Image (tube, rainbow, N blue to C red):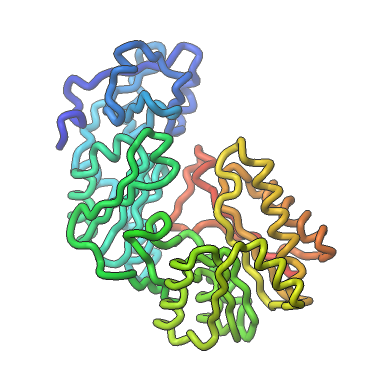
Length: 402
């Protein structure tokens, strides 16, 4: 247990009189900087300090983590204002999270902790067998990484814990970027991950995010169900997500397009491990340029999937992001054979499903094609959604038949 996690002598922070305490009481997990009394004492708290939150009438609301450097100045940790945020507290939440995943999956490859939705604000933990990658994207978790890791090993039995401290969320919290092996030893190479009958290679030390995106698992499976005997184009393929799943589902061939040579090398290694390398090809290049070139060459595919990075990572980027999604759809639609399928994905929480679907449908129309929506997919159940927090439901996949 670390000193600043104990309930004794805990500092108190208070909502301003006009702040809406009802949202917090009903489960909203954040307090914004303009909702808190920020006197000199509050501003002087260390980022990640544990405090007692009270409403304007001094009624306790719970235990929060405070970061005076962040727009989200408080994150609710526990409804009990006296809760000790120690290894036992972490272990209780991790045990609850593990019970859900163990019911869902036969093999221990999944997202174990999905931040606020699993009661650990700003914390992401992905599990790869006996290895776990932790992303402490909030100051409090960064400060309490030791009891968190000790609890993680005690609850799951993993032998290796890697901290991936990179990404935009940490920057917004004022945290440094770093990647460390906290427990155990770094793997000698990429970690093979079985999913939907495919094998993916996760670079847990140097890849994007934790090395693999588990969130698309049900959408990979849906795409694979459409892929029997199909020619498949997987654009923004990363380590081969949709393409390898399609080959596992009986696709005749898959072409994976990505701007990263390292990601495509991992995709090829996955195809090799699956024994489908003869049906798998890669093409490195800018996705928009490759889509244009394929259309000029008169190429068509039975199944085309576009899973780009977040084009609208914030509200300020929303208009430009929606134009980019429309452009993807406009360039991809001509490549889909008559009666074939087009899958368009967005991981931008700022672009809600309706806006994203409208932009995609507009792009398909501008390409002179007509489509019917046959399925809408979201992140898998190991990425639970916090009802009070729209941001936790970021992933959308819209399946069209053209």
